[in-house]
Image (cartoon, rainbow, N blue to C red; front, top):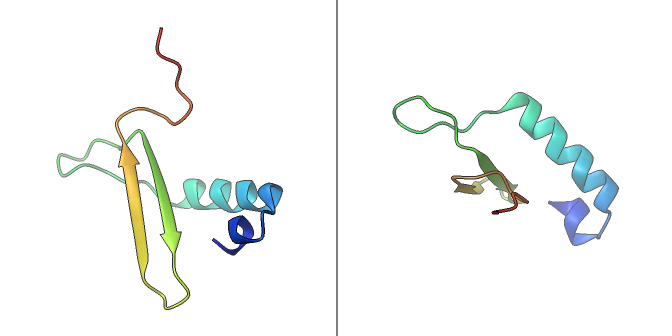
Length: 60
């Protein structure tokens, strides 16, 4: 994300919020993935990572 490369964290957060409001990443059974990161490259391809728990979750 260009905003991250430029260390414009406010813009990066805004971009992430827009992506999350438009996309849901789901498991094959249809259940939603708790958290994911999507990276769209300049060549139009994309990559993503997912996790079972929301990022920033605190374990007791």
